[in-house]
Length: 56
Image (cartoon, rainbow, N blue to C red):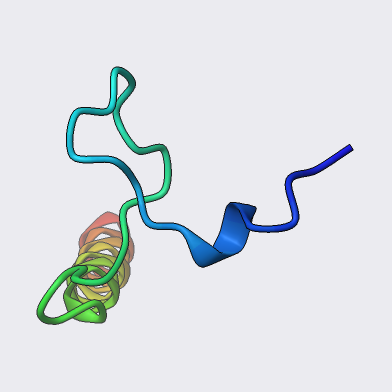
């Protein structure tokens, strides 16, 4: 059974447990991590190409 008013109430100020799903906010630029992965992937590809050229 669930309390019918559960979702209508806010979290109490003196809650004992930390909130498991923080509300709002978040990273200012959520795509920043994707850019870093892209750059690292491109660097890895360039290094593989240079390594292949040097071997042959």
